[in-house]
Length: 164
Image (cartoon, rainbow, N blue to C red; front, side):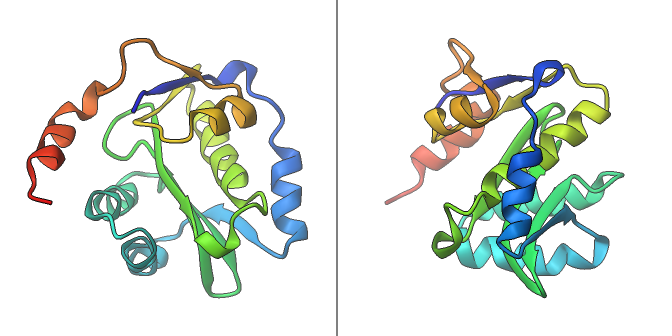
């Protein structure tokens, strides 16, 4: 899976995505310290990916916290992290299966990318992307040539050697 590059200085307006999530009754916000265990549990239950759990957890070691949540009341519907295991990288991110197609993923993405721009980044890297077309459409990202394994090579090798 390739990495993608987003020009933060030329980032499209994320307001329509934020408004769509809000109209659906969701709040998209930066995580607070007290969200840490809830987020870990959410990522573990919804995505069954121990690496994602670790990356979500690492977002709480940054100041400010580099995780965003989509919530409705106390319920977490989705998450996004950036600057977790690599500086300048966005991801992982995910929305609960039954709540997709409501703009939550895009609102989480834009919250993160806008925060990266505020930190002074001109570009953000979306690492090890599955849905290339989604990121091309939503934020104008482009595939970085030759990035199919990228900085995640050691993780890729570890995963590919595990028994099925």
